[in-house]
Amino acid sequence: MSVIVPAHDAQEFLGQSLAALEASKLRDFECIVVDDGSACRCQVPDDSRFSTLRLDRRGGPARARNHGAARASAEILVFLDADVRAHPDTLERMHAHLTRHPEVDAVIGSYDDCPTAPSFVSQFKNLFHHYVHQHSARAARTFWSGCGAIRRSTFADTGGFDARFERPCIEDIELGYRLTDNGHHIDLEPAIQVQHLKRWTLMSMIRSDLFDRAIPWLRLMIRRGSMPNDLNAATHHRASVALVWLTLGALASIPWTAKAGLVTAFLAIAGLLTVNVDLYRFFLHKRGAWFALRAAPMHWLYYGYCGVAVVAAVALPLAESQPALGSSAPAGGAAADPRPRERS
Image (cartoon, rainbow, N blue to C red):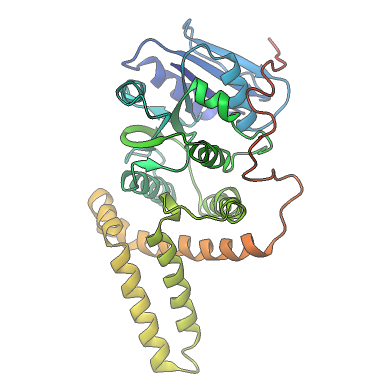
């Protein structure tokens, strides 16, 4: 297996991420850290399995991963983020899954339920991600580059990540759609897990959810003309967005239609609690009553700005720098640029 870790000024977490790989039960792997134009050179363990590929300018994680894939020698490419810590069995489980299922072309995992950042927002964000991946369909439609493996031949045939995404965005989702459109199979295996080290604030969470995920993801689905019932786009998530905005509309109408507004808001909130009761039980079980009580309105806030993203995705023009989402020939893929310029 070739593990590819893109890193830009990732000194805060990269050491922990690579140390976890050193402790992997699966010993037969190489790890290529792609230094995406960092101000300070990335440091790797003094281990023959670890190497660096330094790019002379920052081009984004999609481009960096493609360069790492072009350098890789193994038949299975593993993509990990620089701010995740693999479990000792993460690589072993990936390898076993793809060995047992030769018909599967890629497999993705999940964040675990033990994020390191102690703040409420960080805990909520990571636990929500964990819950979604643990309870989604095993036949996935999207890839996840935070913790995902793909057969080298499949990656090359598909053209790799679209390097026109110059910042962390939906480059993995877009790759997953191209994979499944071309008849390749992606499995979600919940037992494959990594620990997320990133710290979230309320503003960084909203900004990332809106501008790096929801809006570009929705625009991608609009261009494709389909909305797969998968992960955060599953039917109950869409229903929750509608119920949150129905609640807000009903509350706003109370000055004019007091009884009808109150009744509608009550029913909509009851619907939200019913649709998401398993998630709130999960929060209660993992972090207790006080966390669950705060997590429910935070969850509704998430669906509130997802509704804003729907309007923005339909109404706002695409930025000129955004790639032609859903195109079949991504620019800057591994096959398109197999020999990146390096600095030693």
